[in-house]
Image 1: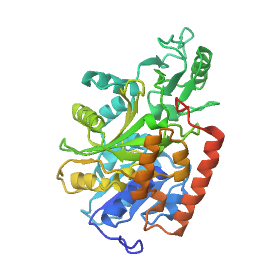
Image 2: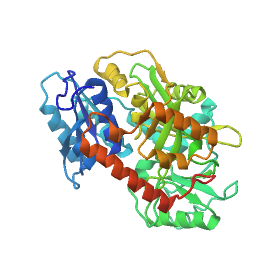
Image 3: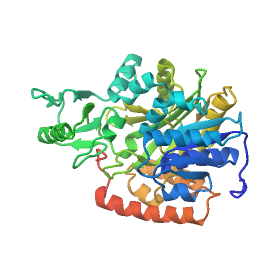
Length: 419
């Protein structure tokens, strides 16, 4: 492993927009493959991005506008030697949209690897995603859509009757639209146990000024271990070069983070990766993508929930399993060539949680034993990336203890639904 004090110059630069683990896992990927330090541009600094050896940090301040971010990116580009290529990446939905909005300003200075506005709009909407899956014969979750675009009109009625029994799941069709509204009790995903709770949520959304589409979905039973994550890359020349899938063991359960995987085990999931490749080819996708899937334990049906038009918060599980995600975008956009497709199947345990905590939530004895075995051979925590210093290793311990307290408070034991 290269010394963190002596970064290597690979002949190109990487600028990552956004803070937190989303960007840290990306900068780790480039450091691990090329020995380089990226540049991370943020509004508000996060300690893990300040302390990591994998990036330099540019902080603009909490009040920085989208235009300020654009201008900062252009200023950074002006500091590079003429002709030196630079990738611009992000791992947040709202920032994907920002880059696309300023594409004409940024493309003269950066190599981009993301879909255009038209496709981004389609894929960002979970309802549109389900329609595409239906065309391709990919299973999705039964859904009722409530359109809030006319919610300000007196005669609007958003209280749709659902064709299945409660409890049901509620979530916004478009995460970026939902990001801009605020109301008491706001969550990323709602678990609704009655028609009264559904009606109360509709009222809250209407009063908050939400104008997007909101989904009410049949509850697919199964705890967190029924969830799957797929990470992929499709090149600008139309070739899927990367496919990797993992079984979620435990996700985060605080209201603002519900559904984010926190521990996963990679493996061979051929039907999932084949469906993901079919989807990406059908829509002529470009760049990294991350799919959320849940397997119905009653039937074995693999229900695709959504596609994230980015690599995904926990992408380090791919690099940790032996395939550097960074080389796929570098070979495509910097060097202008495709590489042979890689389907990653090596089992590793990715976790930002203490192993004992993870195992306590895995109820299937066979799966628990499998996880123990995988952990003995390959347990990977991004906060314990070997070139990092003492601060990051200490952070992993403190963060793990904080997670233990959070789970005791909000999800003290696994349930049949994951809620």
